Image 1 (cartoon, helix red, strand yellow):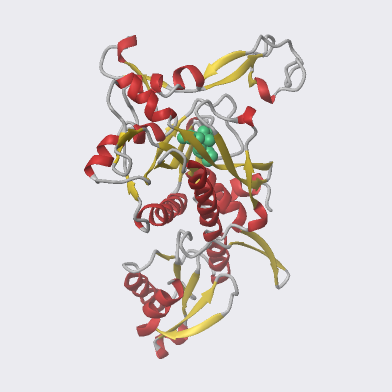
Image 2 (image 1 turned 90 degrees about the vertical axis):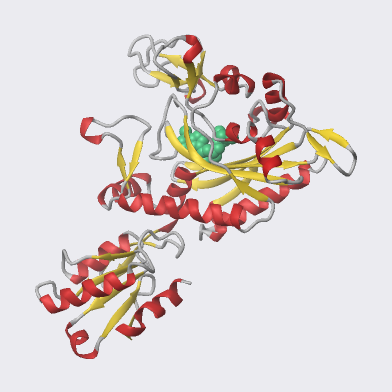
Length: 431
Ligand code: GAP
């Protein structure tokens, strides 16, 4: 397992993730995804959407607004409950989460600490030109609420019967007191959330289904089993809305930590929104002829944490002919670049021209990169480090025999393939 600095440095050096607003000194808890990071992140989201929405008959999608009516956050309990305990150092003025502190002195300077206060983690903003209380609302701290307030819209327009779920991927914002561990704890991040509506009484069975389903999804990404575990939270750890919660945890460099939470939220959310909005959010159960408030099972995953897990798990260092080879063994679905086309000699215009034409031919069918900015050895090393699955090399012989070599990232084996068969051979390998 690499340490976090190794991954941070690879991400910066190879164009995955940069500190946000870096030229101005950055901003704590905010990160920018570079050209390869955005591909990896998009691949993760697409894989989740395909498995959780498109391949299931009981799921539909949603894309709700980030900024919502402030009453949503009163009803959800976030205005009163979404707080972390905070202390300030009276000497150096630094601020800490109270539950991160051992003892009663400042961990930085040994100074005296203030009493514990509750700090609400929602970012406030104003809608319209007047900055008064009536115009004040929040950036959403979770995507879930957009789903609850659309429960009736979705259920009625899609004619869904229980059990069914609504899925959403989107940004969330939390003014974390101590962001850190790279993209593990950010102030702006993305969530992939499912709110699965079930009949009361079937909730515990569905809870188990979703823990198993979500764990299997991480396995399908190629994450090693020994680095994943499921932990049931103690009563004292449960959020204000939860009856029971399991976490899928990963063995990060700082130890086992949450990757995804899967909560049984009971009828808390729909009941609260119904009370605050005075709208009927019940479901008519045709079997019993009764109106009921569904229970909700919520598998809630972080996109950024999944990016981090995927990178940590894929990172390998190997010795090849006495030299260190760094390779990201990303799965076929997740690798940002599937194929790199490389000319063996960059000062031979015929070879460069042929390589460019091959790259153009492949581009509509698979994410392809062309690179001629270094010697072939360095080009291979670069592609290994970003997880590119196959390198296609055009050499002098290619001009005569109209064939190229395909190099496999993991085995480093090379096979020679006629150019007119190349696309189909690669598509087969990628399937
Ligand atoms: N709707 C339920 C909910 O938001 P959560 O456990 O607070 O539950 C769910 O968050 C997931 O979102 C976490 O498991 C994590 O992957 C991700 N997440 C939460 N806070 C985060 C943060 N500050 N930075 C990055 N990811 C975060």
